Length: 99
Image (cartoon, rainbow, N blue to C red; front, side, top):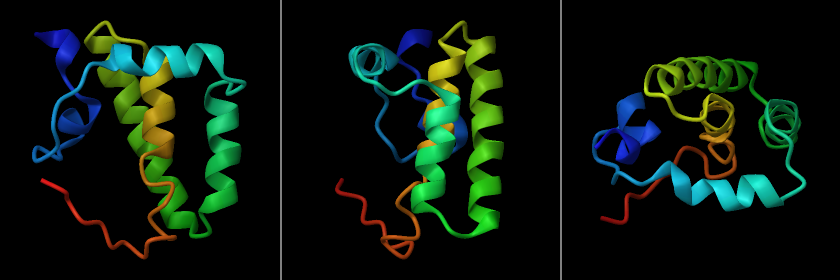
């Protein structure tokens, strides 16, 4: 089912579990977070390397286009793309997959 496709899987991390984008809507709709501009500001607070910022922005553009092709919320997918590696420098790239 197209509505259950994960942007993470589309991005190419096939080991991640699929999830419904609908689960993100309550947070995004009720918080004071306002889309791309706030995501960029938040990213700038946590990311130092310009190359990582460029990577996050490129990922956001790919996810936005993919969301449009799948008739999903492009703004939401763009924000997820911007923030997907927000903690990468903080954990020094040391991600452990729990499954």
